[in-house]
Amino acid sequence: MPRGGPGAAWWDRLYETDRPEYLDRADAAGRRRRVLRGLDRLERLTLAHRTCGGLVLDGLRDVPRPRFLELGAGGGGLARWVLDRHPAARATVSDVAPDLVEALRAGPLGRHARATVERLDATAIDAPDGSYDLAVFSRSLHHLPPRGAADVLREGTRVARRLLVIDLWRHPVCLAAVPPAFLCGGPAQAHDAVVSLRKAYSPAALRHLAAACGAPVALRTRFLPPLYLAAVATRRG
Image 1 (cartoon, one colour):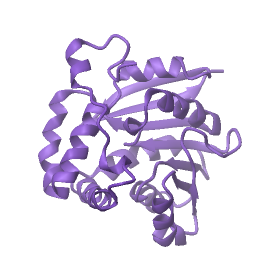
Image 2 (tube, one colour):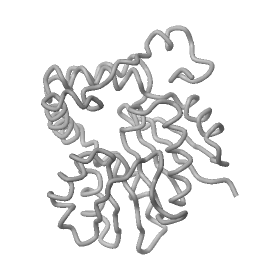
Image 3 (cartoon, helix red, strand yellow):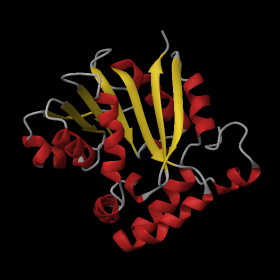
Image 4 (cartoon, one colour):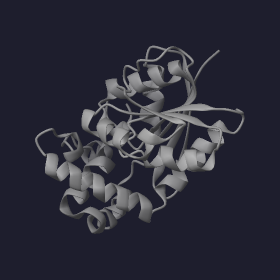
């Protein structure tokens, strides 16, 4: 399926790429570290954690002592932001990459009284049904092929009452974000920014994946300024 959805226009299909990001390459460890540092600087510059964290807090507002799961947490900045602002929240912070999990355990979240760090695969989450009030998958869905993205929608809505997916908005105009990425992380960061934007899923694609994920998933999507797609998925019934 095209990442613009089954009915994607010809220009959208040309815009798509299958080129790997440095973040996804095991043979580019040095560039991967530079990209991660650049991402951290870019997220602080653009207040990304405030933008995305606000949606997480909204999703936890109706629960007195909420438990949330962050999938694909990377450096863990989003979970730290939320825990700092919600004194009753408890977080399970996870990633699939062993080196990132070790870094999380060695950092502030590994010492946080209300945080647990685990290695989890977002496409096959090792947790019982209904373990969390909210699962969050932020700025990571585009790293997965369509089958993997559908698995995230199925698994996230299985282990949590709601799944919040935040990713990049799919449109060529969003390539305007590449120069700031270059300034924050150099050529490697700019490379991954271009690839990420061209791999992002459209709302139509996410609706198609939700319908095909093998579970009765309802999905709502919206544009989140400056260049994000926000989707909330729940199980029907």
